[in-house]
Image (cartoon, one colour):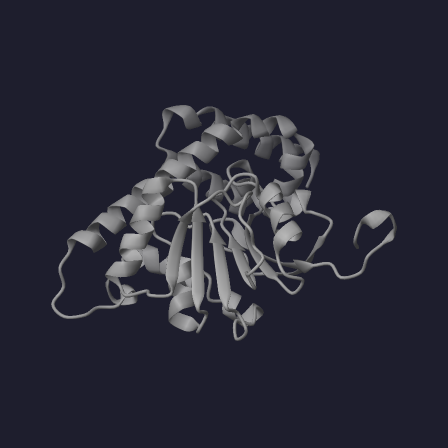
Length: 269
């Protein structure tokens, strides 16, 4: 990227960010994604690394994105809980097209992680509509599929939706992922929505079994402005074993496991 190109992209990003407080959050996020695709991942990452002051916009963008997701979840869960269908129906038969895109986004996870021996799956940041958990229920024999969230209404709604569609192996707990005991979990999924990913990953490293597999929904490019990165402050007891496919929303799966080789000083490598 030339110096002139960098200045042009910096200017375009600055204008967009400065206007974000007075505009619809959904529109701002869409335009940031469009700008990121026009810049290219490498240029966007370099721009953020070169100008850390851009992160001053992160609290407002994160809050706006969270509120946008919550509004969508509330509208969908209210529709699903209120509507009466004739005869039994499955979630995938009646979920909206937008929700099914989220449901299908994790299909690659089942190709990268072996669920055959998974007895307990934990999702950190399940929200009101934990479609990743629903997909695990639909596709695996995992006996316990547990969602964690710190919002009481999200837990109540997730339980109601799970019951509505007969997801008998799903549970939801009001719990901060930083405090949960992961000792019985074989597979853990961390959403993009949570804060303190680094602290959650450290808690997993402290309490999870040696053979645990971890999937982190990880931002890249300009999405680092509204979603926290787990990779950039990764606990040294964990290591990256792979990446999932890039998604147009500027996120992808990060696959982790526990490091097995100790080094001097009580650390691991």
